[in-house]
Amino acid sequence: VLNLPFVRRQHKVDYFGATLLVAGVSALLLVTVWGGNEYRWGSSTITGLAALGGFLMIAFVFQERRAAEPILPLRLFRNSVVSLASAISILVGLSMFGVTVFLPLYFQIVTGASATKSGLLMIPMVVGLMLTSISSGRIISHTGKYRMFPIAGSLVTTVGLLLMSRLDVGTTRLESSAYMFVLGCGLGMMMQTLILAVQNVVPHADMGAATSGVTFFRSMGGAFGVAAFGSILNNRLDYYVPRHVPPAVLQSLGSPSGDALGRSRRVIEALPELARIGVIQSFADSLQVVFMAAVPLAVVAFLLTWFLKEVPLREDVHVGGVAETEFELPLGPGGISDERPLPTSSTPSA
Image (cartoon, rainbow, N blue to C red; front, top):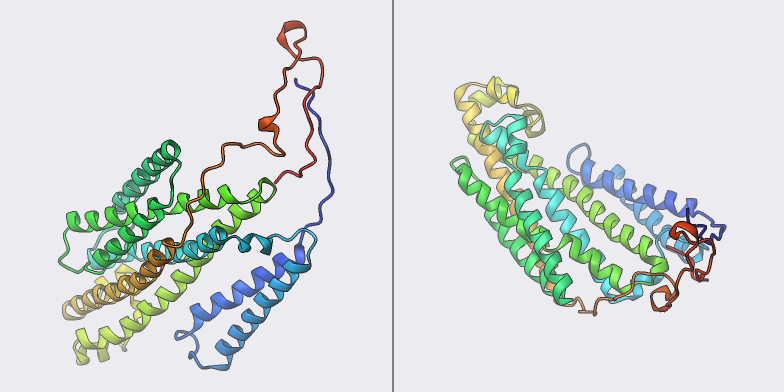
């Protein structure tokens, strides 16, 4: 029932910039998905897509510099906190989404769990993520210090990925749960803390763009991670399957590719005993390589977190300094204000 002041502002949506961004990212994603699988890495299709994606991303940068209201203001990256948090978010996305997507594949193919059970088996990682995310948030709200959590989180994530690279055919449920819990603890200390660090240093008017930008970089890292690690997995399967499956048996099966074997657990279960054991071992060895490939990314993230500045947390959440303005609403009948003494702000909202 409050009759609050309202100001309508006209905005110009940067549709052209959004189109360039989507097209550029899509082209680069196709490079990682098709490279080494559908086409050779040096083929004209892959090199053409890489060149097209690079050109579109450069065009996107120029468009954002000239757009009246860019969807991703480049001035934000002049702040070292925003730049570092964006880079670390890409690496977090690569490590989190690029690796955890293959955990159900490990449980279903290597350990023989059903699709539903493989999802339930990942609960320890979610528990670790929730515990550290909530506890780090409470500690930050009491101390006002956040820099130590990305540093500790990236270190724990590195340890977790190293443990995940030990997953094998003989790994027990308790061991795999402990490995996932450690990985979840590391990710939980990083994800929301990086967003908080960015929100703390940007102007209120850019809060939405900065927050969505960091989230976008994390999602983009995850998309590239899934594609890149998927290519690594298929490549290693094509390497290990001929070495773990007897040549005569493999020839009788028509030399199926690793990608074809990984599409369904039923395909593997229908194989002869020697072939089935060899294929399962091939998946275990290939997934170890995938998890190990993510370790250098986590190490780079750990090094970058040391350059993240500790900026005191801001204490106001209002736009245009409303927090510093004291006023009292005259109450009308029934305790409801019948006047509009609220101050207005000339600062555009995010």
